Image 1 (cartoon, rainbow, N blue to C red):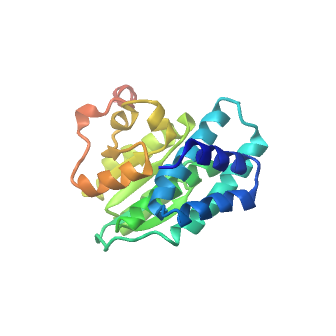
Image 2 (image 1 turned 90 degrees about the vertical axis):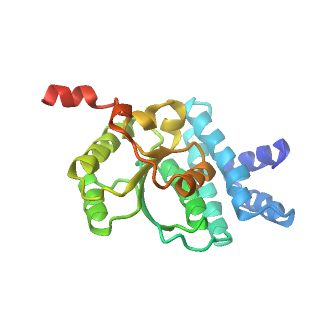
Length: 233
């Protein structure tokens, strides 16, 4: 674990856009024996959450937020090359996320942990139309479709995508996983929109994909969108 002083120093370097200081915090952590996985779990992810929370509360300015997100993403990219990858699980994950760079950063940290756990990962990022996602899923038939969303505005499109995947039924064995801040802030939301699995951190998400590969949503758990379907009928 990292000390409060270290976390504070890292946070301050990011929001100031101080690339030299931020790199030095990471370098010092490596010298102290922290693994790449620990950097994600105990340094990058908690700091990301602090940045995101303060920005949403309007306690962090736009410039500081953008500098922090971009600098942190560079460090996450560099850290990925040092991950200790597990033997392959012969499982594929296709992932997309919401439109903001902050959401891409959160998804990237989760996918780094998942890839390090032995999964084969493809990440399309943001601003991908649902019909393109569906085409990819139908063609490639991944074992897991991972959807990352940080904002409530992402939910209608995400819900529609899950609905269509279920209705078409071309990938009956595919597991749908969700993650991101919007699900952390609204307890039960992931279950209600029909996701099979979900988690609050990248580490938990990797763990649940490993430990519960056969878990699937049941119709009775899904409440979001039910009234819409009744009206359509």
